[in-house]
Length: 211
Image 1 (cartoon, one colour):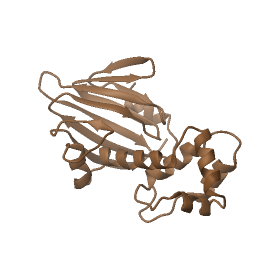
Image 2 (cartoon, rainbow, N blue to C red; image 1 turned 90 degrees about the vertical axis):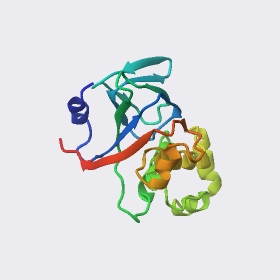
Image 3 (cartoon, one colour; image 1 turned 135 degrees about the horizontal axis):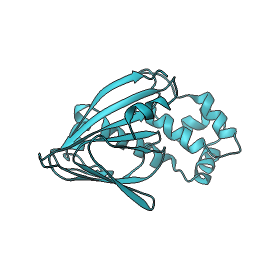
């Protein structure tokens, strides 16, 4: 899948968060799940992606599209030059600093008869990982009870605490912040991934997508 063709299918009002990563040793990431559409681009080395019942190997200039909440595992193998590298692209509309969660859209998702509230809440948590999330706050803002929120999440296979923990861990995985980067390098415990200290990741751009 080429980058030009994949970008052309995205919404004109969405944004792309792009992160570059590299490692000089084999690296394994297990049990990764992002709440937004993601594309994994291989630039150097072999990128073995396992999801569902199948798998694929990405080599230079190849990419894979991963659906929101799709569980995947990846094993990265350096090439003959001794390095493996690639780019992660996330289609996510990140809010301005200090903004509030989209309570109106969350209320709509909560009241809907179909599934979707769990994903909507997880996406809101990913957009604002530093917000003071609590069941009590969410229930109050949505004019419902804590029990109602928990039951809705449970029926959709979500847990409030697990979703929040996952979103914050994902940010520690991809964020350029120095403390979070050190967590990626292995100096802090991070159960989402097992990576060598030589792993590095940096945020490269956040740009508007235009059709």
